[in-house]
Length: 250
Picture 1: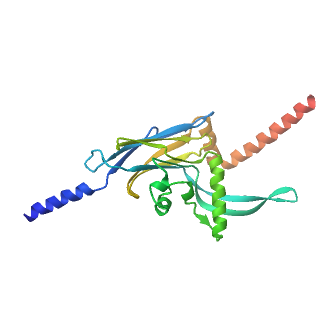
Picture 2 (picture 1 turned 60 degrees about the vertical axis):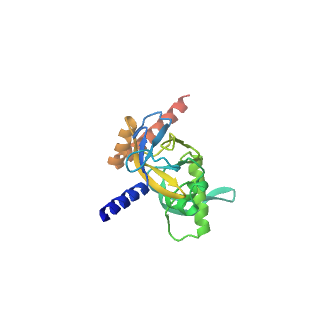
Picture 3 (picture 1 turned 120 degrees about the vertical axis):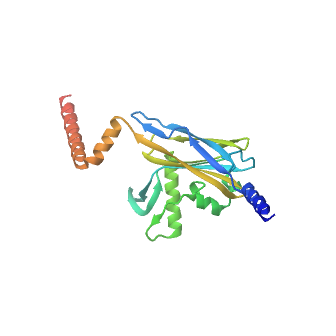
């Protein structure tokens, strides 16, 4: 009888286990060639229970796509005597070169602000890791300025309603990469949310890399930085001299 009760209890616990996410992306490698104008990624997948069947319960999906992080120094411009000069500045240790969020519903209707901040569900919650001592109000101002700049460059975006869910099983979201994306490894994190709680998460990667002549130039600039710099200087001086001679003959 005791063994039977333990088995029934185990099956009951298995029935209460959270579902699992099976994510996928339309292309795991984006090739940046000359004339690259951007591309669209399709992030899709399914939500299943631990036995591999459809989860079959109401949930919301949030997708976060992030590019490689890099340190950034943000400077504020100030007009002085009719000339714009650099004024205050702020350093951030870890700024995503690209950041996009898509969700099945507005984030405020899915989770509270604390949960949204933990998982970075939106540009308001990006963790930029500021360095040095700075006033909180100043830090917030510089952060908002950085997000605004990246948004205008189409590198930061959010689409609250951009995830479509079919039969509470399949989901999909379309996210556009602009032409000015940074090369490197991009992470696509998918979160299933129910009752204000993240019940499942999964991650896949997308590699954005230059190919052809652009890649050779990038490799040359990194492997032979000194020669590359000298060559760039000689080319600039040579083209300037040639242009000057040409205009002198006209």
